[in-house]
Amino acid sequence: MIAAWRREGNAAAAIAAREITKGIKNPTLLIVSIVMPIIFIGLMGGSLSQNMAGGLGYNFLQFMMIGMIVNSTFTGLVSGMSSLIEERNQNLTQELYVSPISRYTIIVGKMIGSSFSSLVGLLGILLVALLMNIPLGGMHIVYLFLLTPLFCLVAGSLGILFIGFVQDSKSADIGSMMIVMPQMFLSGAMIPIQHSTGLLGFLAKLMPMTYCIDFARAVFYAGTPEYDLVVIHHPLTDLAVMAACFLVFTVVGTIMFTRSERNR
Image (cartoon, rainbow, N blue to C red):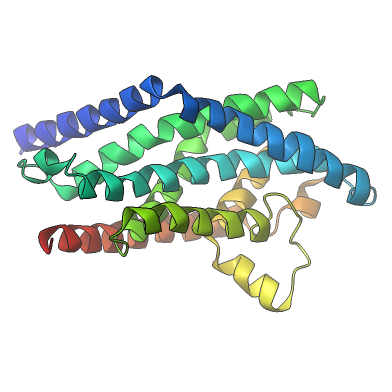
């Protein structure tokens, strides 16, 4: 039993190292991971702050910075997991699927490796925050960064669910953006959703990113006067939904992905 667990752990570490090496050898992806937060927070955030943030009662750019930290992990993980489709279609991962390791090990290794580029994107967010004098909240930003692996798990599980139902690499590329972009605007990453009702409020509740962002803000604003203005749910509610999403998405996505691999 111990030997089996050791084998699975070594396999996951090797797959993760492979993904990290690919990311380092492709600096374009790392540069994009850093530049995108600069564009969204620096340009869009700056414009929104100047035109709509006057009566919110809190620092809008700080509010948006937290949302973009979570969004960065979702973008990197969903895109990274989607790349499994292209690798499979090009027969670049056949040696993995014929090896005596669990499919969950392959997925976990891929998830850990894909987290690398998304975490690199946090450097871009910090750079924008420093250039625009966005308050970092002292130790609160440290606590938030320590929790980013939780957001990576939820984002990765969403990516796993997605690739379980997609066969074509082109559809995967387009679909991954169609998953992330609506969540960016509907989950409160950029625009407050505390008062969203009707269809928009319903869609916001369906988005996994909504609960990750809300939990991130609960941690960042804990003990501050702004807490009740920016946090929607109790943190335990957010954690429960995040855990449920991770378990359901991972199990269902892995089963569907493995089945599609066998039916090739």
